[in-house]
Image (cartoon, rainbow, N blue to C red; front, side, top):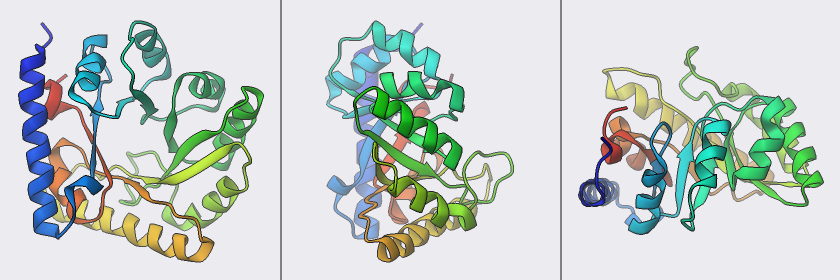
Length: 230
């Protein structure tokens, strides 16, 4: 049985308090870190809860699941794709998502740009970088990030907001810290080199939220702490 709204609200308040505490320790303004509810594998009610609470966006992993869920939701909220996207699903992704966070190749960029143009829209994207050099994770290699960004900035129908990464699974918090610091440093270097703002750093989930905030995350993707284990 899915949780009720009061349970969600209590959990969301707790996560926001954790974000605020992490910001205080890092000397950051809590308004600079947004909370995204990861609603993948959860029912449409999860999206409705997030909107009712006042969150700006929800994150979904699979295109088809999100398409079906969005058809059942009337809540005014942004839908973002945070899972791996195959090029053959680019048209669906452009049609149903407000932003794609998991862009990791020039091939995928090209497909998304073409589909966005055909659908008459400008699609916001984040470039996913495997900043932790984890063979189990998707994402472009850090060494390929400059070329990927250059290609993305040249696409007329794409808006590059910044970067996303997922830290390797590890009991050592230093692994996540090094991953997030590496992405922040890469972003800073590329923003200075290209002049692009690249304001968004989508980093951090339930288990490494505080570390991500300390290392500069602007958007944390939280599922388990809000909805419970899947």
